[in-house]
Amino acid sequence: MSSNRFGPYRQTNGDSPGPERPPQGTDDRTLEELRLALEELRVIDEELRQRNEELSATHLQLDTERQRYQELFDLAPDAYLVTDLAGIIKEANQSASSLLGIAPQYLTGKALATYIDADDRARFRALLNDPQPELPRARTTQFKIRTRQGVRLHSEMTFSISHDAEGTPSGIRWLIRDITEQERLAHQIRTLNSELESRVTERTSDLRAAQQLSNDLLHREQAARRAVEASEAHSRHVQKLESIGVLAGGIAHDFNNLLHVVLGNADIALSRLPARSPAREPLEEVVRATIRAADLTRQMLAYSGKGAFVIRHLDISQEVREMGTLLRTALSKQASLVWDLAPDAPAVNADATQVRQIVMNLITNASDALGETGGTITLRTGVVRREELMDNRFGLPIEEDDPASAAEHTYVYLEVADTGAGMSPDTLQHIFDPFFSTKFAGRGLGLAAVMGIVRSHRGLIRIRTEPGQGTIFRVLFPAVSGGVGEPEHTSTARSSWRGTGTVLIVEDEPGVREVAQQMLQDFGFTTLLAEDGRNGLEQMDRAGAQVTAVLLDLSMPRMGGKEAFRRLREHAPDLPIVVMSGYTEEAVAEEFLQAGSGRTAFLQKPFLAEDLVGALRKVLEEVPAELNEA
Image (cartoon, rainbow, N blue to C red):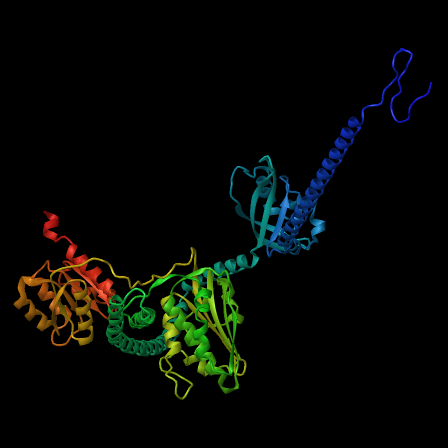
């Protein structure tokens, strides 16, 4: 009987069949299952490898954090120890080693009570026996300690209870400060006080007191003389600034009238052009440029005290970055500008136009400092903490600006550094004086304006300069929390609202009067024109009830807007009046509100037609007071 090597054999004599080999398909399934099992093992192995890598990275991070903690612990300026609840030292830093006069490795395992003076040891052991672990905060007490060399020190010990993962008290953390010198000074003061009190009882003390009084009077006289001199210098400085402010305010007011003619006519022209006219784009650019010019006049008004800053949260780096093209035009051809702007500096609460003026003035001064030889100007922004201001390497304060008086903890700074000739100490003392300049043709107003702007923003100025070493100006603004605020955007779009009636326009400037007339007529109103307050009252007497509202300028000859407003209110208390001025509302509100506000709105020049009709619509639709009470 033989077997087939390629398959099972069968018996042919009818006896029981022998063992058969599994079919071919069964082997294939087994191989496939083995292959899948191997594949799963490879996937599991890869997952284990990745997890091992993650675990290794986590261990590395933990080791880094542990090393950082150990460095902070070891290099802390005060003595720091960790003990168990019985007071046995488990850890000690370098300061503790220096204080107690023994190496850190030899401190471990010793009782902290060993270094407590014998007079205080009983009180210290009582504290260890009842550390009051339920108290959540650290506590401070004083003990006398004795070093290994036998030196007796007064210490202030702050301790707190540490807990394990289950919340059970596991040890005590100790912070020890040497107050021996303070105690010595306090003892000395007490001794001196005691001696002084004993001397007062002696007859000879009268003579000493008289001599002391004479010296005090002499010192006070000298101090008073210095104070008077400082006050006079400050008064002269304030008078100069006030004269500049008066000049700036008058120029800004008159310039706003001129800007209003430009802006108003451009706005009227835009309203009369088809939507797809090629002339719209240049006219819209005229409107935008005029509005930017109006921002400059508002800045001058704010500087003169007759306006207000437009304060919002700013990213100084972004504001400076947007000035790139303008700054390059202000530099001489020999100067190169280097940018180093912090990308993630906190916001500051400031007026964007004022910040731009600071940058432009400092850049212009830096360019002048380079002269014909040329050089580099670096424009940098960054963040600095209050304690860093104490370092003179950051720059010296000016006048009464003292870093110790700074209230904020964090400042964002704007730095302009040049490689020019630098300044002498005498020049440095006068650079912020109005009209002071080292240039033959200079006006000397730039840095005085910078000083005024920085102070109005509660900021600081630091200067670092030496003859031949260049100059660094740093302007610091208090950092604020919160995001950056977006500026308001002016639109030239016209509303579909239309009015009826007659509006009396009282304005001494013909161009402003004519622009206002065209704007009102475009919105459906008829107009009466008056060149001053007296002429306006005459027009009211003739027109009577025909006048629906009044558009009144405040600054006019013969009779100004304040007097005209008062008389109009006496004649018609509920007459709608829109007051307009080149000054801001804050600067003029008190003048006309004294006569009774009534149905009144305010417009600052220059304004668009939509602004005018919005103010007029507000007073026309406002309910009179007596109807509201009824």
